[in-house]
Image (cartoon, rainbow, N blue to C red):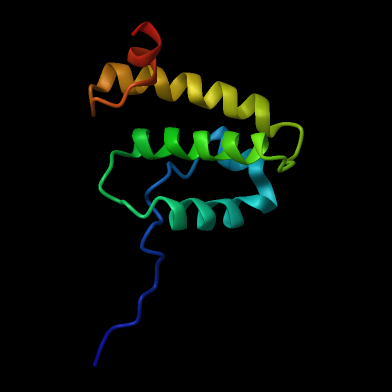
Length: 102
């Protein structure tokens, strides 16, 4: 007999306590589900995953999706923090700051 799954398989992919996820409020679940559908790869560091989620939300905004007023500023702050942490952690070649210095 198989055990019952009690958690979502992607629950740890995006840092759970961050300004961008909190600011999304009731839109969070829908956006996470859409993100996880589009980006099924779970073999990445949580800083990378969180930064990609921010980029995904930016893409949604660029396509005309509207969110609460606090989402865009929270997103900008979070992406700045994550970019610095990615640079310092040397987690992956993926570093937004490295790309900007190019």
